[in-house]
Image (cartoon, rainbow, N blue to C red; front, side, top):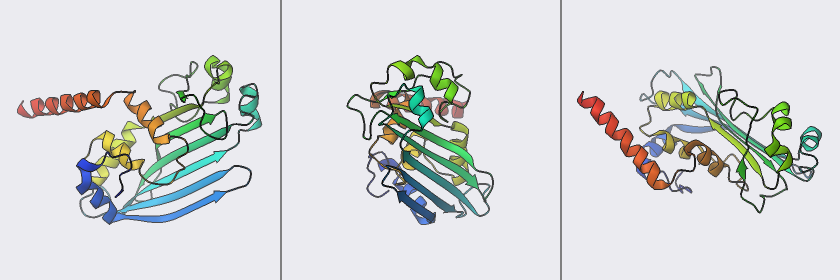
Length: 234
């Protein structure tokens, strides 16, 4: 958090400082095997500090990361193109006062090798999946078998990513953090509970912001601020 590797938290330093003061890593484990598997699980607790809203005790962020060889079914569905490949999964859950966990974000990568492909990774085109049906939680076997892009054109790594805007809004409301959605996503991806060989943060940001340039993002933010000012005047 101090290093700000993505250089996107300069404008929310006070909020980051507050997070550091109320944050505690409750648990963290990492397992790596000779067979090319890696598992990372961590739980971070944000203790209620009087500024939170509707929180009696704490907010918990549960992180899970896994890297492993493809299953037999995955290899068969891609006609052997993932035989020497890698499957990467990263997700983050949110809970309040030890209640039910909600999935905040998911990132999944289907790599054709054991390291990032030479060609730039592309988002997985799910022709068979409805946009509002489990987006970002990973394609089903049926989805992958029906996707021509996945079956016949696996020349580079593929990825899928998703942020649940309602759960993200819950995080901002409960913590009472004064930052926009963009800054909050950068903040969440700063936690070091995943490997950085594949650009998971970049995949998520590309998906959420749709490849918009910095100028377009700044214009969007300015338009949003203008609309809020107009509503306030009314």
